[in-house]
Length: 499
Image (cartoon, rainbow, N blue to C red):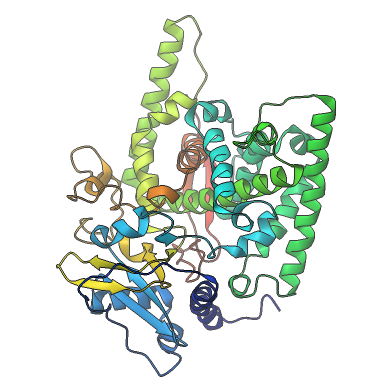
């Protein structure tokens, strides 16, 4: 059942998902009245068939294409309507400030991501009230700060298993390496030494239960959902037992699992075993999806732009040589390779990752809802009224390609972020709203630094040790909620002879 939906059917569900969330939110919300103002006009709406609205257009051209077309036709503020409900899209820094920076009682995120509850579990994330969720985010912020990340720069033993040459699916390889990294710094040595394969398999089943139909009906008894629930229950048993064993033995480990065990709420309450398991799964789920997707897209872009690949390799060799010289000067001897300090200095690679993420955001849009009506002004000076209860979207598939921010926006040009250009910083009054791949404001992704570090570790090792060539065509992007490469990314490799 999970595998018989056609692409068009999935796209239909994608749109219905947005609409259904809107309906769910509107029905369940208590909104505050908007302040009285002179009435600006409502946002322009896309033309569509009676009742079904834009669904026929989505079936023909795809959701992302429809969003881009309507932006070109209607401007920076527009509404897509279907089945009697509406989503208002806000494009560009001028229209995005209220969306990202308004207080929670005006623009809210709650009620939009209930699909995560069967995956993360009870007592965490969007199963709990806002205050408790903010405290749990505080746990994450403490765990993901730079000082903690320093100890998690890991050697890439996995790639040592590659032969002198061969052909691989890069997506599959990167997914596996990220699970190995997670087993080192997140899941704990109990998993790494005794049950890595089992936990990796269970996590694969968990992610496999995240279909578009899951957004619409997260508890529908499909085969994929049943496998998801079974895997989540087993992961809960495994991690609950690890937590209990650590607590009983008094053993303390240097990993993020231990950080969660030791975390306490503002009132002094300790985290429960259920909360620790759910938070651990949430960290793994969010981090794995972003890092895997962005690492593969960055590698593919570098393989098709050899001038930037050469620049990344030259920077790496220069930084490693300088670090080894400094260690030798201080009596530490040579060697050591890439450490945390070297990773932090990799500006060229950082810009390549950032540019790949601009061209290939990990999600097509960011969602919020208006708990209170407001007025938004576009860059041409037009004013539009957005009613309370309206579902809002910041479409990354448009925002990351705006020509008034990025020169030649469809071109892979990492140097657009270099000092002297910094196109994302050059827009007057934009603050943090010109580059939105990690969000902005109070809900910006707190794992951004950790994601960059994981991706740099993987790509640095590949660039240093292998000559790579893309053998399959450059992949298209999945035209669904996931923005991963479509199909396989087949790459041939040949081990480099290092001096």
